[in-house]
Image (tube, helix red, strand yellow):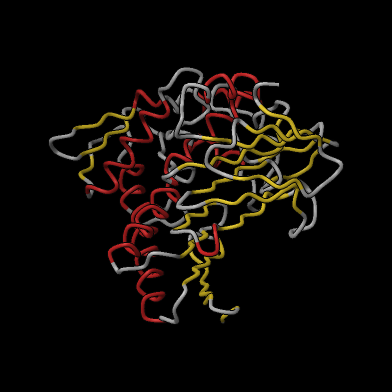
Length: 320
């Protein structure tokens, strides 16, 4: 379908609705983009028994598995992010994700001893990499890699690169939480920042970006309630329980969507104060924190313009 001179193409991949926007009608190009996404999904998924990542998981504690270069490089990147100081990112969190089942049928709060047992097999340093062979070995039986927190960013960047190769200067790809923009049609792309636990179209604000990735991670995306308490899908690999701090969501603006994936998780784990302190050291990464106390905190506004859209939220910045 088209809106003025923008053509939109959609598909359901990676468990999410995928949206591609182009400024010329090209169904063949859209089809190739969706095929490219499907190829990468088939490599990375842990939601089916057959993928290169599942081959690694099935061999845990037994032998290394040689994988394709994209899979190896993404795992290497994810391990590095997992070993940063105070990192809430953990590529080996698979056993905990499966235990909680958040967003799937049968989700409930696991027993404390079950969580403790799974924590023992989620150590990122037990993911053994061999650069020469491009092999991955999970040192402990029962270990499982889960690239769900990083795969969409990697794929969004590959789609951007492919569109550039095809001569596309202006466009947008939305992989469900990961938005990668190309060019600056009419001065920039406008991306909404969702209002937590509200209607799907309710926004706390919008941002305008040019040639940037926008990645949001929020407690409202997948959760369940038990005994009057909300349990969301963003797990803390240090405790085994959902992260519990002042935040409802973090939106990261960066050039690469892969960085956006990593930094939303890192910043969510750090909270506003520590997150702001870390961002002062990075000119290339910016963030929008949305807190439970209805406060929106901007790290800076070098790479985007923010327009507040909900008067019940107070706007502040990292220097306040």
